[in-house]
Amino acid sequence: MPTPRLLAVLALTAGALAGAATPAHAGPPWISIELPANPLDPTTRGAFLLIHTFHHDAAMSEALSGRAEGMVNGRRQTITLTFENTSRTGVRALRKSWPDGGTWVLVLKTGQHGDATALVGIGADGTVRTINVPTEKRGSHIVPSAVSAADVDAMLARMASGKGAPGGEQKLALALAGLLALPAGVLALRRR
Image (tube, rainbow, N blue to C red; front, top):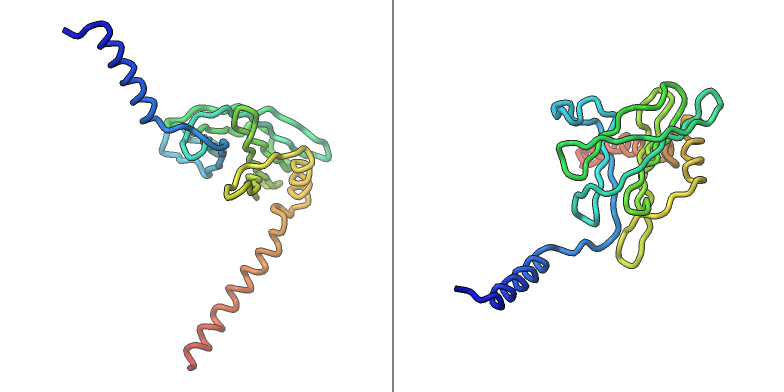
């Protein structure tokens, strides 16, 4: 029969082994956006978009907050957003709670101090035009960077002007030019 002292040693050893087997969560939180939501999952059906929250690389139900900043008929509006849990760990559904019309920027923050932010730009037609998770490089790591009120205002102004993401027109023009150049390059290779 084990003695109380042996039981205590076994309990401490088991606790130490369990702690060693559980990875330490280092690094900042992360946020990503999924759309469209899966209509086959009853917990995501009808959602405008889904928000994934992570601590470092592990999906976790981190703290999540958000607001919709809009420009409707020349007036600024702010609406606090609410989220619903889904059938997946670290994934919450956002249902549309802002009015139709105008342009909007969804400001979605995760982490204990809102450390990672996703900015989702919505055009006047109600569709998502851009998603941005601002980052910066620290050493060899890419980490979320702070988002200021000016960043939100700038994206809202781009949405209101119909331009969407910064530099989007240039990227589109370059992509189209590349597509046009591709057939010419294939013809040149065939002639050789």
